[in-house]
Length: 164
Image (cartoon, rainbow, N blue to C red; front, side, top):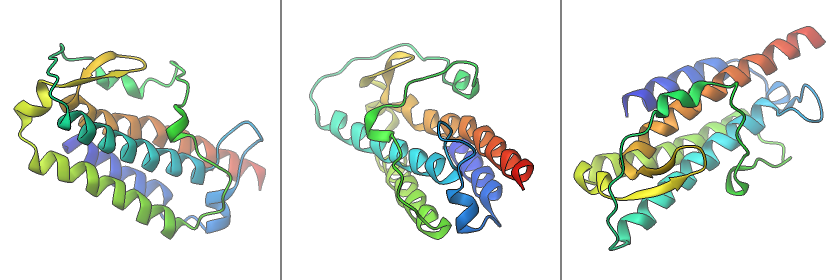
């Protein structure tokens, strides 16, 4: 989970010092606020952790070649947000969001720390971009996904500065 830890550290550094109002500020109606990006990240991480747990209970085994998940950071490739990870419009404080991110991160970390790697390698689940992907690859995918959205947060912050 090295990429996940590095990404989480960068993410928390990126939002450090933002007020709750700044976190909830939207650059435009069609763009996400920092809050919505953070909500999307914990929903995605938590959803992936639940999917991995569900697939581990299945008797089905299906190995799949490794996918180029590091390409996830390429934001020129637009990806439709799955419904389970679509953020809402509820106002959250930065502390509330950090707490939710901590919970989702712990759930994924628990899988990484308790499930043997060979069990994660012999099971897969379809990914909307990469196709069938091993459960083992879903763990670092979360880190790359987070790195992708750190750039988005930076753009929101730049828009915020320009709007002041």
